[in-house]
Image (tube, rainbow, N blue to C red; front, top):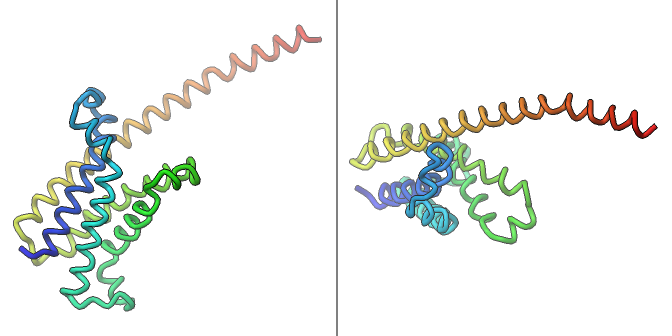
Length: 189
């Protein structure tokens, strides 16, 4: 095993720990009470920045080891999944501070949802770049990515069902509100 693989694996594990709390609580609400979940939520920013630091080391070692030219378009064609994930992580890392949260307001949350795009890019990155050089860590990484991806997909389904129910509930209340307003208008005359 190389340092490159080790840093990549550690970055992945640390990154997954940032995804676990919110996804787990949404899919399994009882996990909100778990001490480990509260701990991970409390230190999520630190863990995210640690994952970014480890992934930066992974990228730098890869550039040095494989003699990758960052200015070549060929590099981005071959390593687009890792490059795109790294760009997303860079943006997330640089906006993981209180000042950015205050300045971006609601846009901050939308921006940080790109972490799920990075999650799928990482899965593809592991599959394509480790295709012919698996270490004993590769199956573990793929297994963990499958688990968190599956939990995330369940979360998306739950949230879409809740959103539909909320919209339906609003639609049901509209006629009542309109009827009340028209009745009120009759009395105002």
